[in-house]
Image 1 (tube, one colour):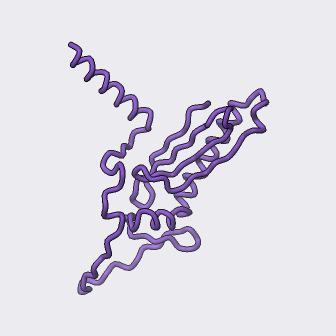
Image 2 (tube, rainbow, N blue to C red):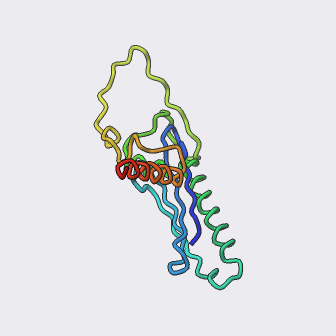
Image 3 (spheres, helix red, strand yellow):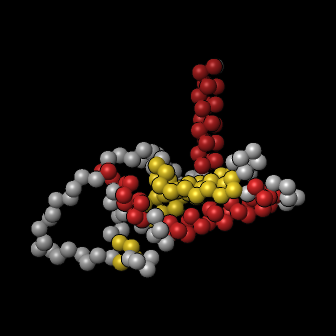
Amino acid sequence: MLSGFNTNIRHRGVLFHVQTEDSGVRAPHIITHLYHGGTILASEKSGYEELLDCDDREAGVKSRMETQHKSMLKRLRGNAFDEIITQVLGDVFSDGAEPDVTGATTRPEPPSVTAEPTPVPATRSEARSFGEGIVSEKPLDEVVLEYLVDSARKRKRTAS
């Protein structure tokens, strides 16, 4: 089983996390998830059974993992997941841009100064998302290592 890839990426003002993992030779597939605050928004799974008997299996799997990971990042950047993101999380995009059918983004006209404020319906985005406020810009392995070091220090202090 190979080490995976983790990328924190901002899209339209919102922080997302893309994670790609190898399940190993017993379950030869690669899984990539797109997360926001602990919620899986999209997944992609591909098998690599045909590589199991190859001499360069590790290099082949790593190459496929990179390709699949980069593909998820490109699709996020290309607004491919904007509809599902809005369905699951509500109106979370802070940039005010709306994707058009070509994949580009267009900014809405700013409201006139004399416009009356309109009530905004409550959405899931107003509720606190799982992990909100604790999502780190650091890679997952650094976050885990920091936690383990802090935990070991606390145990050492209580033992003395």
